[in-house]
Image (cartoon, rainbow, N blue to C red; front, top):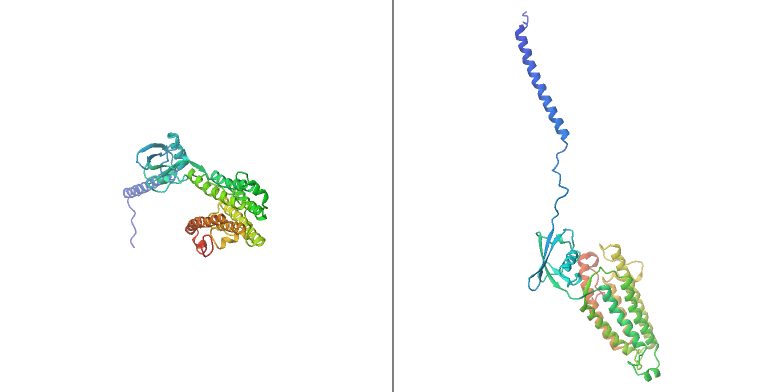
Length: 363
């Protein structure tokens, strides 16, 4: 057997030195990696450089040009991105005091639609300079003032004819002729109709602070006040003759008139309640009130009831002026109903597509 020879002392030391050097190098590498790991852990997650708290806010400049001449009227500067078009109109009014905000019409393009006051100015911006076209809308009035003026006139005018002023009718003829009960009933129904409109304007309808041109109010007043004078003159005339079918015709028409007035009121209350609660995501649905069940057939039942009131009033009084007024109201209400029905179709198509606008089947 051959014995294994032990290495000599110098060779053994040389091997230990080499082995020790390797261990020393491995230990140094481990310590370096450990130190680097500790450095990374102590640094935490990599973050983006912090945003300066006092960064500059980007402001817009609104250049307002005249729509006809394209000449610059003024520049509204330092408009914050959160501003609305109404804020721009107020600043424009400070620069040009002769044009208050309600009569200022601003357009993004010439002959384009007027921008709403609630629109955010940032949504119109393509660059830091926004160009808008100005149109003077003329003298404006609020919607509340518009309706109160329009409805107060017929109420007072009718009462002036009802008391038979000496400047309107012959006093001798007025004292001789007996007033038929339908004359008093017509006065009650006519006053009830416009009192309801006035109370709803004050306590039911909520207007969003919008305005309309003064000339529109003048047209509306001329229409309502003029027809009221013509209607009241004939019904309250001393020679007025009662309806052909007498008491039965008057009673039936008066009942229909009162039902239409009640239905119109409950529909307006339902629509106002929906707008107050903010639930505009669905089409108005009928409630337990039977007068609201007309929502199942038409999209604008308030116009249906309004037309029904005037048709009933025509049958009750049997006068030509009331008939002409009712006919014009049918035309006007049907136009408004069709316009609103188209808007409903865009917003609530599945719920409205099978409904009529104002009168089932016909409109």
